[in-house]
Length: 82
Length: 69
Image 1 (cartoon, each protein chain N blue to C red):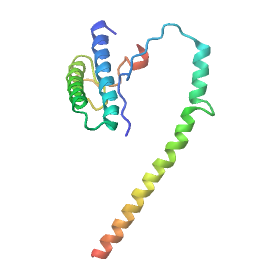
Image 2 (image 1 turned 90 degrees about the horizontal axis):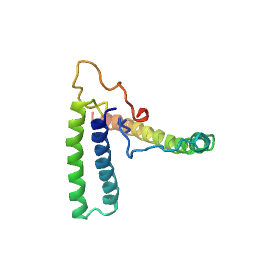
Image 3 (image 1 turned 90 degrees about the vertical axis):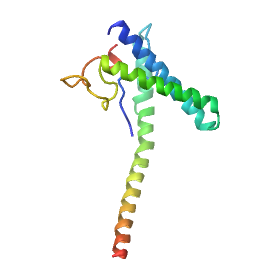
Image 4 (image 1 turned 135 degrees about the horizontal axis):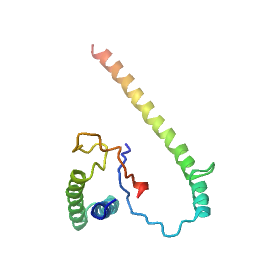
């Protein structure tokens, strides 16, 4: 896997990790305005990055749009192949 | 309920492969007394319960519609 692709995927992973953790925190602190703000910004950033990644390299979810004539979902690399 | 994503929640980088440790961990996780089996034991009744409740709700709905008619 080329370097730029790996960097972009890692950035998506880190942004998603942030939103997962903030989400868990918000389950027990639902009135924390600052956490909600951080959560929303990381979710929006993740959406933007995923869109960019999927246009360039292929879908992250099976439900993502397929920007190609052939079905990209089944193509390598899978997470265990890197 | 479950969605597969072609990415990891947290990136892993294996520096020193250790087959003995890997075997031990996979037995703990997927072996006869492992976590996977335990979670399956716990989740199956809850799925069956959900299906049963849905079934009851549907039956009730039919009965209710019958009364209305």
